[in-house]
Image (cartoon, rainbow, N blue to C red; front, side):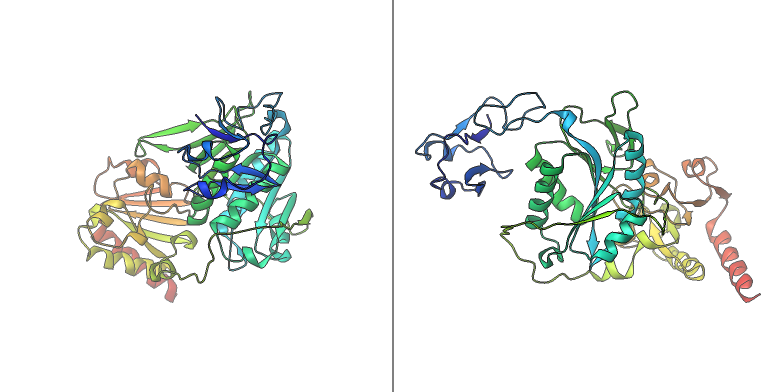
Length: 408
């Protein structure tokens, strides 16, 4: 059974703090508090001289109800939660592209619910907050403290968790980036609510007003629709380059609220952030043209041809998982469910059959050009233009024509 602290009995003697091997007991507002690190080892039960730490039949934050639980933290009514909250990720002081994509879907959801679109921004300045408003946010809660400049699990988790508890948004969205995947699950654990990771679509149920969180499941063989009807907030991370940006309005106005958080402690300190070479050289997320190859390329030499086409198009080279597994190209180029999700203006699928796992990562591209020998290949079902033939004959002709067009 879950472990909880009865606040009415707790005298803040701090005897329990050193007893926990997982550092799951901390002091908050003059009382002991058990956080998400608790493994229910029960070591602390016999330590408290007041008997304030006990096992309970229900967790401290049960499904939403009208009443509380004696000396324990009271439950909250589901009606108390409204608005849509976007976590705006920043890197080196600049708001990340995925944040603008979230603002697009967030605005759509908030309009359907008739609520406001809120954004929490950590570690950036007011000029970035103003841009967020122009992309659709009604309010931006800005935390400018230098401690947020570099991502840190502890500081981000504490700040966002406290903000959500105080402001009670019904929906919380973040990017399924390394940062989002790192700390958003911890936020959900602290809030005792559900989290759906790597969503590719979000909708509002017209009858219940619940968030429909849609994502691939069972290796991409089905699309699962997940709901969180009994807890709030409803939380989801969204894969980058899946959602389209909303409309930019240079004259749009909104409210920027400057925030601070006191007594913010962290067990770790970020000394330096170092980018991998592959992260610098291969930026598929930002590429406007991607030339991707699959098993039909034949071998690593085949990618030299794709690199030439990508070069004349001013694009980047991608790959299916099959090509990466064969060792023909590095993982940093992989597109699909287990790779990167991309949404370029033009996507060339060369020798790619079109397995659903790959389609998840590229089907939102504006124009998809498929080149494959097999006329029955599934890739043609999503392609804007399909070319049935040998890619080793077709691509050299494409390169030649593009070069001639550039000279004219």
